[in-house]
Length: 609
Image (tube, rainbow, N blue to C red; front, top):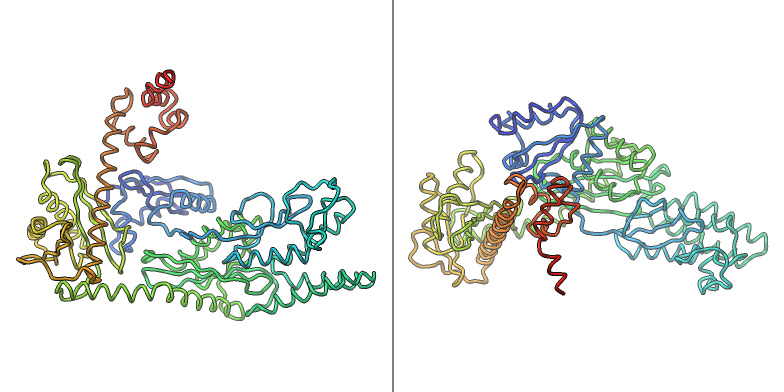
């Protein structure tokens, strides 16, 4: 990478802490990183032959390097996490958890707090408990909080002016703060504190309070209330006894562990509250490649707690974390929590046993999630090789297709199938340069030639099978392109209409049942190549159309037109942008001029209605 076009830009980076961003040719961020010294960090990407495969793939796409200087390393850490969350760069480790976990909200920011079920956590001064793996447990705990602690769930404004309480008061499920004289602020605050301890899992602190209230009610001969407290004490004790694991100490902690195989990984989080294991959460990652477990833990933890503000005082990791990264993570989590957070890697004793437990859970979850899929993938790989008469399994398949509009803006696609599934991260598209008019054969030849010339010259892995969307003509064109490169790769073509499979130097299509798993994989790859080629071609046409229109506006050249497309994402995005948004992108005068140009005639149209 010593001849990389960004090397000179890297040399210009300051020797200061900050955040750097690699961008592709479209200006999209593909990787965001932090550094104590921007210059040393970005220069480390160039001049090395031992870069991880994931990093090499990122640098192949990088066309721009940008950096932001920060005052301190912790500021860089915070900015990095903010940008990753907003930009979702494809080569960063991203927390892709589609679930919205349930929480219980205790509105401690109100004079008369209430409990409610929610899936959205806000920085609003209230207390949130969770997340819970499922809503059943959250709603069960809410019911207990209402029926036994008698804290309200209604959303009415409490001013004590209501003439009578609701049914919940008569059911002994609410203290009735809505009606003056039914409860006092002190009694209600005590109930809220009991709920807070209960939802926090701090049963050891809660039980003495409940027992004291039980005996006090008994001494006042309020036996009905004493019985309620007695039942509540039994419930809290029973909930505590259900925990399978109890640890020394009464503090809260989250325990992290990672298990992976160099391609995929699973992160397991075991939350301990009051020293007891209260839940288990699993997160699965694909395509993490050679990302170190420690790096995965740090990146994951930053994103995890950014979405979940309930940061405990102690974080324990089964994986070793470098000292600098550990200090940064502690500072960042302390910033989120508002109090100190300690990150540790226990080596002995009870805490070491619970990180071992987290590691066992991560390993089991990984096996359950990925091993079954791996077994199926291996079966498909073997079947493809057998069906096509190849010497071994097809672990890497690449498929090509072409799309154009009457020979204009011809675009070719190359999609990748590996590990039993389509690998979207590895898709490529080609804006064809040498083909004039409608010539599918020449288009396939150019795309195949460009793809494998680069793979050959850079020593990149070559596929076990090259599949062409088309018939014998397209197959021969691809074979000629490979011959010119001096490469011998297994080839096949799949025609659309008859779904016939053609092999080189074969006068008849391959006799393969359409229900055969190998045929299904080939059709899947062919259809995906077609979809990707069409989508890229349409995108190219839209950009060309809008660019042409934009270039007719005085003051807007190719650079500004491209920047507008990148900023607003599409033709429609630019057209739908407000006048203020265009002014922010281009300046007040030019933005106003462009907006009027795009919306010319709309005022006349409205006036004729």
